[in-house]
Image 1 (tube, rainbow, N blue to C red):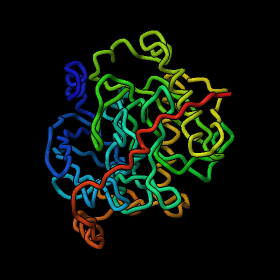
Image 2: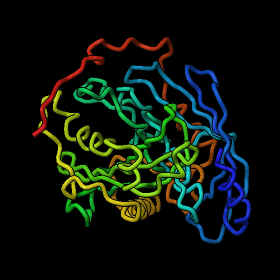
Image 3: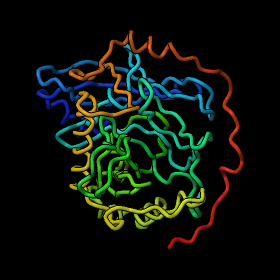
Length: 342
């Protein structure tokens, strides 16, 4: 639910396309809570507007903690893509964004929106045939923020980023939400961007937007990157150290940060978000070559691969998933690693 002042602001903006959504999170196939919020739904067709009520739930397929597991998103009309069908903006005027939570804080499983599969479910990343878990680099445990992505953004792997001189990583832009509440996997939360850091990951640009949930008790005090150090001292330093070190336990060298490791301000972050949204627009309209990326969607008017909900259901029905209880996680995931950075 948006804060009262934001909600009233949205109601007054009658000229904008608005969509009210109810988000239901499923965990082990049972609904735990309902989250209501309002969204401005940007569509590619400038002639159309959307005023409707949509309910979204997450649907688990497969066995948790296995390569087969998927978390799909479904509206009351049918399945949707969290990559393409959830709007980037919750409130365009106030620059409030929708964040899809992939990884709750303090957890280790590297979950991500799968850009290559139809309907882009969340799945666990796999490296060399093994499920990926981020290592615990002392004093940290797992991911130190709620980690996720902004829908309707894309870092084009065929385009050189003007800020870093490196190509994009081919994924939606990542978001680090630093509020006090531990979010749930698959949750959609409204955040404001405070700043951004850049990671050069194996020669690719990988932006990380630093954001806070607009409903967090500290949200009113945090409006730009300098406020993070003022109110959350040490968090930015811990963040840069985390990204430098997290692959070292896997035998890889220390990561390189773009822009000399400087966390850039809100204005810069908004620019990066706008750039990656423009790259996504080119992608969804079929204007760029993107081998291995699924642009199947059910809600983006004017897009190249918009399909009916019935066709989306048929696409999903082509797959079969195993059923059963969650697989155990190996105890080595809990190990702490002690590393000296350069």
